[in-house]
Image (tube, rainbow, N blue to C red):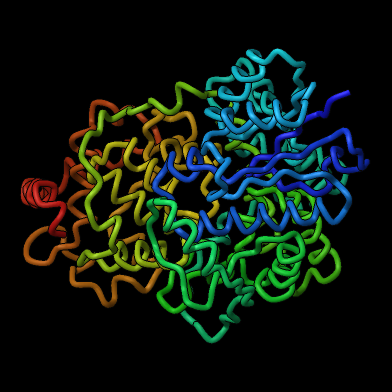
Length: 509
């Protein structure tokens, strides 16, 4: 009798999966580092190293528990560098009589493995990853017959379904959402407490990646890789977040400041998206802190965090599976401009852009407002091709896997989907960036000027964006006031002329 070959992908590191409840010599678990996955996007070096480190640690864990593992490193002579070619020889050499895999979270891998399994001469089966709180099709079913996917109604449904922050059928404190209390600027940096170090020396792995010819972006500190790459490190980081950062999270979750790239954010997204941590254990840990000490852990702090995971994360995954593959081709505004070179270097006079991009290159991280209202905001105002925007976000951030990246980028950030995710484009002038950060105070450009010498590009580009897309946006009830304001502006011609000049010279900004 042959073996069952069980494939584990790099983002399927769920140690509590039912696969691992029983040890059997009839099962051979397969994990692989392959160029297919390092090369489909231009990834940050920390992202590549973090995935490989987490995968190797997970393999060691399974092996220590008695499971049989075949782990292919990137430089293994037998590694064909593609998923299916490796599986072919592994199945043959190990007398595989059945192939099993966990459902991938990316459409391209789902298609690849579905087609591969159909072509096999042996039996095959797929199972759930046992990670997400909803099934792929749940969100589409929930909104069946509705014109839009309204996140708030889905979020309330999830709160009730999992009994999170609930008092019977009603929210524990009488309100569902405290978003209005989540928008404070950080003025007092003395309250910052920093983040724990979890450094891992990865020089040898780094050398292997470079020697193999993998092209990456970004930097890695000589201190090593400082992301949670094991379940234990993820739990340690979760505990630190709950104890030290959660009391301030909600209030300052939209704030940006040059003193600290992470502020009060948890840095748990990589551990969650690789499935080292389960979303419910994170949610319950946060909810329990509030139940134990509601005075220290205010409801606005706790609800703001839980909304991101219980609501937004599941919502975005649901949209991904409801709308793919068509979602990847949406370009509502027909944008075709190339991404400026400073997205890869941070070399721009716009301080908010320079700080956000440089931080991303140094840490493989920026929080949601930096992504949405700085780099994403500028890309939309400048008319950048959403394909290039997607590629940049997918590559540069350590937590970027397509199911969560493309819905946030092409949907929420770029409005390229025409309103499937967001009810309006998320664009702003310098005013919002100044309101939420300290970037503008030391910028080459003048945040208050809309045209003329050193006028902030965000200001004129904001009005230009609405002017050139009037036919597509004017009927939107959420932004009709923008056009009324534009029509009354006495300097509108000068502002739009300034925008034209900036658009013609994007690389020089």
